[in-house]
Amino acid sequence: MWWEVTLSPKGQVTIPKEMREVLNLQPGDRLIYSLIDGEVVITPKNLDFNDLAGLLGKPPKGRATLDKIDAAVLAAGGANAVDIGKDKEADAAA
Image (cartoon, rainbow, N blue to C red; front, side, top):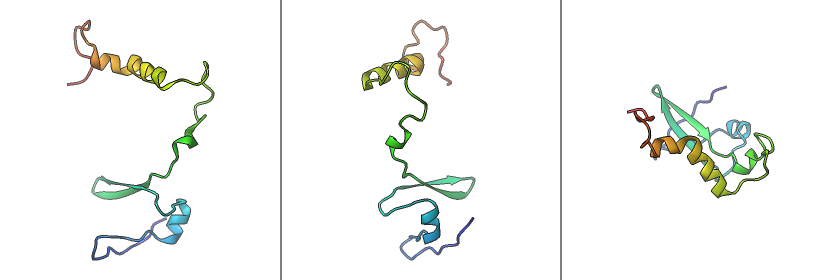
């Protein structure tokens, strides 16, 4: 599907009604504009974080606190980027 729109003198475009309905866009929704290989790509940013709850299944040890999540992220990836004292070479790409 594609739609043709006209740029206003103020640099604005109106998203066609049919496109808004297909994407379930509502007034106040945010959009991300990206420039990819010389083309403008507009992506709706209307996904609610709560919609992702349970996406990966139930955690094996129950709900985690933010402190536990931060610690897990640091242990899994951040530690190599921050603490390279015992490494012979840095893990991060130069």
